[in-house]
Image 1 (tube, rainbow, N blue to C red):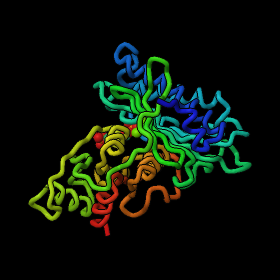
Image 2: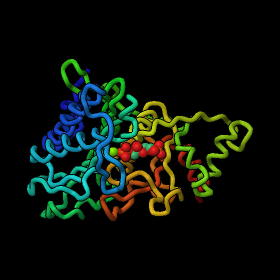
Image 3: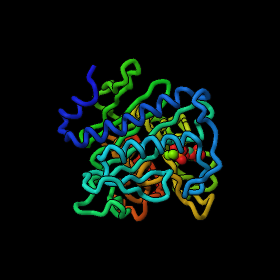
Image 4: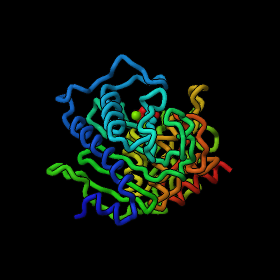
Length: 322
Ligand SMILES: O=P(O)(O)OC[C@H]1O[C@](O)(COP(=O)(O)O)[C@@H](O)[C@@H]1O
Ligand SMILES: [Mg+2]
Ligand SMILES: [Mg+2]
């Protein structure tokens, strides 16, 4: 079984990018350890703080953010970072080539119930001669990502990673602390009978999504002519991992529950990296109006609607949006 560094070097990954990815993974190994310790780690439960998006921060959100932020800034490999848990971008080494956006802990509502959580990251090139303190350096469409990945802290710790040459899956060997290649190229089946959506929001969805889901639920008695199963992990990282492993459609569509917040998932550190991983595995990632990777971001915590997964099923869903 092969370790991560030689695999990436064979793919043409530069030494600098490899070092940056390994730096992120060093923090993720520490997060994996803390998550695995559960209540023994002393970091379950909530803080009294909220992030800039008005969400209560879990202790593990704060800890994971601190671990990633410290190691990245100390490494000298990043010009700036953007995080779900940081109000603004944070400047790093002015001479560094890369910038990183990350969701330090995705699925934080799962922390206290021993369920799936993960870290999502997106690496882009910093524009030449740019100011590390200028957050506009992050305003790049997702197709410009040079690498994207997530680490899923589940029964085992799994890394999905792409540097734009397919999506590979690695498993953390906890006996010696290395990520080992366990799936050469993830390939999302084009067809599926499985979908993932938070159905409690149904009455707040737009008509296109209402109609699509109604037809899925009608099963073999409806226009789709087949029965569908449903899953919801409440952590995008867990739902996308299932899609990478066996296909499916995952969506967090626009809704009218809170008129000030029509979308839930964040573009820079949730939708974009997942979209690259999914496309590199042969799937599709769309908002309903546009390919996710073609969106020009306007701000670091921007939110978007997300429909991703098995190509033919995403297309079937998009047909309702035309
Ligand atoms: O509360 P809901 O509607 O189940 O939402 C779950 C969604 O929210 C998220 O947990 C948001 O991520 P964070 O935990 O990083 O805020 C997604 O991972 C997930 O898909
Ligand atoms: Mg998240
Ligand atoms: Mg998070």
